[in-house]
Length: 293
Image (tube, rainbow, N blue to C red; front, side, top):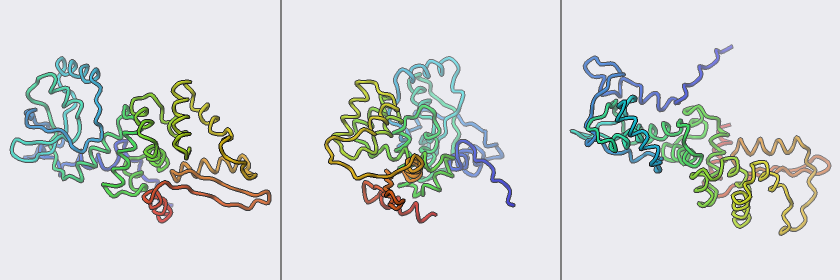
């Protein structure tokens, strides 16, 4: 019997391999250790163009600024060297921005060697691990890692130590209208609420349900029950002989595939499974999923 594989660290292989590797650590030259820190003039550092996070709360930055003024920067930034007196931020954007506000001239940095592909991967993976990232920011990060870093969902799942269903459920949120996505970004709508809205195929119905959630402060369970109510606009549906177990199977398949699943079964037990997709790219994603099996 083969030994049980070692559990991956919380930050995932990609970030750990690149941020903690002495081969990519310029500060490790001349027998220094990977924990060596260099002081870099803040005016020589530019922001990370690959950072998926674009919104930083002003109040939180001001609080961090005061902390830096009092205690200094406890955790060094991570940068890559672009040229003489020119660096680009890899991780630590909040600390970088707060440092600029505080007016300090130098910041402690780990200096790494990284190309654009590695920069993108490090920035995205590092952001995914942050507890205060909203569901849409996580979804965008997942999608960019899949599309721009050419990962399969299986590879991404292994790299960031997240389940494939977690990845699929987040990416499904990007199918929602911009207004609903914005509500998730602004913490007006939870991920659970947003997930309940994804299966609604009609945009008008989807937006009506969204506004009902906001105005009536519905719980996720309320929304799920609302979705089960018959739609008066539609004609009578064919009788579908589904058991409670079949309904559970629908939910399981939907979570695994990241798509709406419908099981149709006759009284005799015969039937079919319908997998819905919303675009050519979504179809290719499903095909790739089954190819991996």
